[in-house]
Image (cartoon, rainbow, N blue to C red; front, top):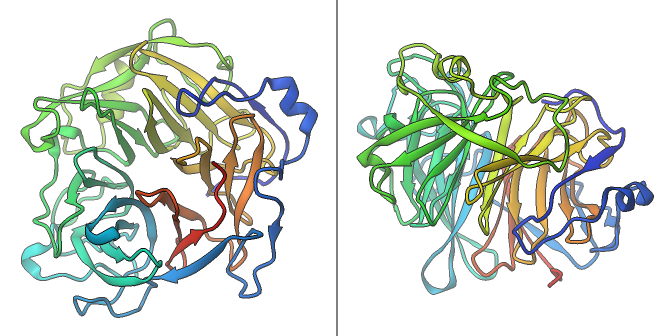
Length: 420
């Protein structure tokens, strides 16, 4: 959770997807308030769930406690999620469940499909038709711990990440791969070479096959996994942590200049699968930079964006941009006013180039958009409770947004007059 809500912000950087250009800093200051020009002001939801702009609608899908197609109940803790193309115009959603060893609900599965009999997290898979109807939903990964976020691969699978380094019947802190086409529980095989740490989310570079990863710690690092065989993560590879070439052991919470690309080096992690939580310690000792609570991450058009939920001088968060081609990193956005953007978490790039960011603040959370002209606007507001929004993603045709209310655990499909 975040610290406070609402103060003012600064913007930096160039493009959301390379084609996108944010407005100059002064222009943003002149706006002063959140812009509403993109879709108009939010309309009160008579059902008290989700406020949206006029013309947009939503439907509720796959809620905690409902009976799934495999006979097990829908678990709680809906979190990270990705959408994939299915047959006959269907959309496949693979959804994380951030449930720890003490959670009241769990992803139920046969014993031989559980990574750890004491683990309560995992993933479920949803099949949605073109009319936003739930066709089926079922468990797809079980026995893991605190599956918070993850990321989609270019080859059509979901990488589910454990935001945990607990030791129960098994060590935790791993990535598990779940094919989008899986119709039942997968064999839960941890990708140990990718490292054991409190991993939040991943983004895959479709050109190199490298995997970029965030760590949800106050002193977390930013990682790159270089696979031996791109597209086959189970074949192993090498793990590295990002180092700012001119600032060894940089503490990036505050004091980093905006809009200034910084050269990057990658330090090797010699012990990626330790018995204790030492991966970030090894990396920092070798000069890697620390990032405050790295969370959501997305790749688009040669650029990698990732959120540090509690970074910045006021703790309202930061968004960073890494360019693999130039091997440079820059502080892209640093909000100082929670009324504009409050603790950015999950992120996605919309088909029209807007960036949508889920807030994880301490009050009413929203999905906030950033337009090519630099305006920030509220797109969706959770009016049911103060739980975070998570798992924002788009259907393959770009016509439906999916997002989760983490508590009580509701997946929502949203559609309407998207801007081109």
